[in-house]
Image (cartoon, rainbow, N blue to C red; front, side):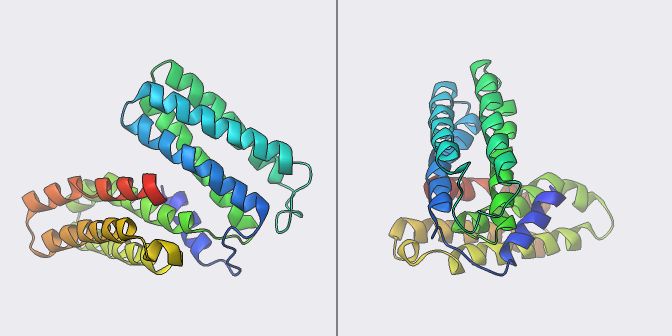
Length: 235
């Protein structure tokens, strides 16, 4: 998870911002839509829907690999690791599909997470940043808060340490809005979902400041849903 956070920070600090201006990045973003559905459906224990989404993402990735694998456009043309990255994503889809067909949906969900990392690293190496990277940065820190929150609270100065993490999450929630494309900022559904995202973080922060352990547990439990809704639609 710490590796994911470092990757997210490096993505956000890369020098050249490219917003799906090249055909390979555009194709990657198009395959990302069924991929997001696959992540959502494996997490929701919906086997058949997850299978269909992975197949769709897999087929899109195969077309992408065939089109660009041997002749990538700038800025990917000089990336000596491109072929390995494209192959790695393909292998993840094969593995995840096998797990889904075996009804191992939790395992498939974890397997599919690798696709997000490979794609993000591929873009990072080539100084390409898309809106999804800001969503991914938020996700990485959110998972850290959820997975480590109780452990932090049990230690010395635990509430202060967790508050620092929540502060980072609050900042990244703001980045999701400030870095969103103009068309999303005019989208009422996006605006409403982002407000829900910010509120979920604000509620955790308020519970921490109130030193209300019961409320903190409740608000932490509600942290993931607003992000999940926003991710499946716009992530």
